[in-house]
Image: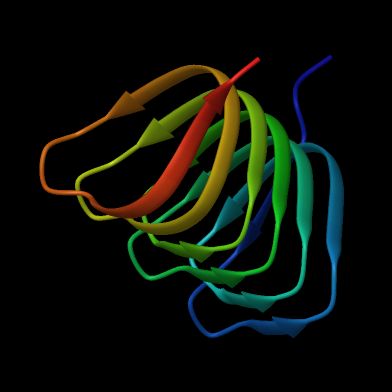
Length: 103
């Protein structure tokens, strides 16, 4: 059985929470909380809300708290908030205003 992937492109704006049981790929604007098993955001994405996921790759803008097992922050990312994670990697060039906590 293959993994289902939901993709929201740059022309989409969501006001409200998103819950995805599998993989979510975002290049859109979200004003609300995002929950997904795996989340990958591209450089055009903008999330204003909390994020909860087992595995996150952040490439866009995020303002809110993040809870995840694994967080990868790309060089194109702008992240503001509290990170609660087991594993964290940050590429050079990322813009951060964070407090990181490991659990």
